[in-house]
Image (cartoon, rainbow, N blue to C red; front, top):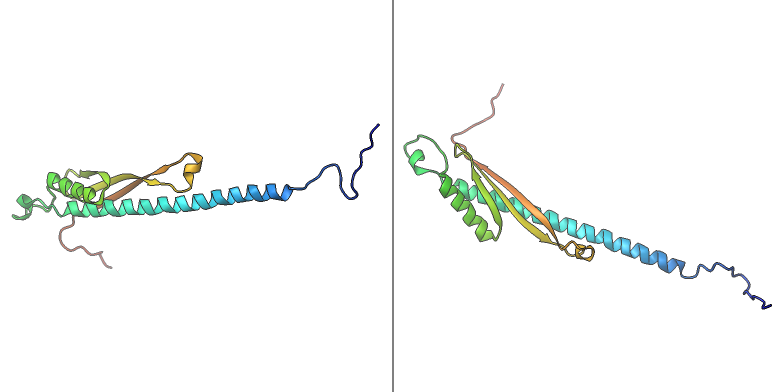
Length: 150
């Protein structure tokens, strides 16, 4: 029968390399957290940009006041086709896709932009881009309004 020799101070369960496995797991988790922070922040910036562009497109469309109603003083309202064309032109110049709607009374213009954010770290888990949507609204006001006092 063969004898099993063991060095002094060593048991049968050797934990050599255990720290390396722990460090590897922690590094992978840390890179994942950093990736979520980077891509989350990037998506937030892209959403802010989409909101900004949608708001500016709504303002551009709001400049297309219908002269047939404004000159005689009948009403201050946008011409729906001209307002949509102006807002779409602004979206095209910014390189963003979106939709433009004008309210029935011609006093409110709503713009919604759509796009995507190309992720930096998330492609590792199969997410190459995140959807981004922006919203903007312009409301035509006429005259001076002030809050009523006591």
